[in-house]
Length: 136
Image (cartoon, rainbow, N blue to C red; front, side, top):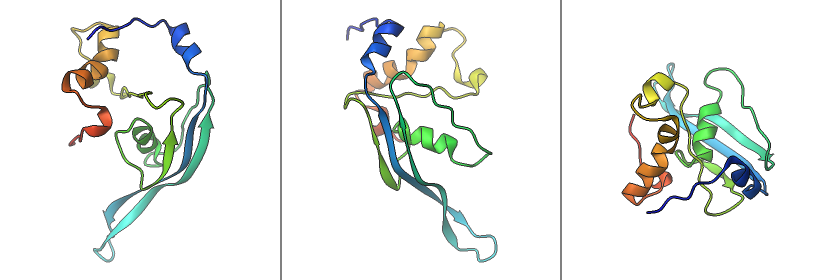
């Protein structure tokens, strides 16, 4: 497989449309401490917004408010219970780098090698990130 080098300007010029987040809902099962029953805990309830090309968006909120869950859904690491993510292009992929850099980076790799690791791994496995199931 031959990789093609893309400059930041070429990458940004290619982003001419909007990433649309439409009605995203996500619940996780939790045990109710009073009844002992497993009930759904909704962490995302109808989240809808657009991210225009060449714009930065910041997600902020208290712990356990669904920020990381939403990012995982956008990156196809998690599936929503309802709603959809509309990518500008069908072939567009989104990867994530987690904030705990010390445990997430390979110290013997360059910055570029660390950033491109997930794409290289995905290509070597012949699958997309959304097709893989991760265990924690």
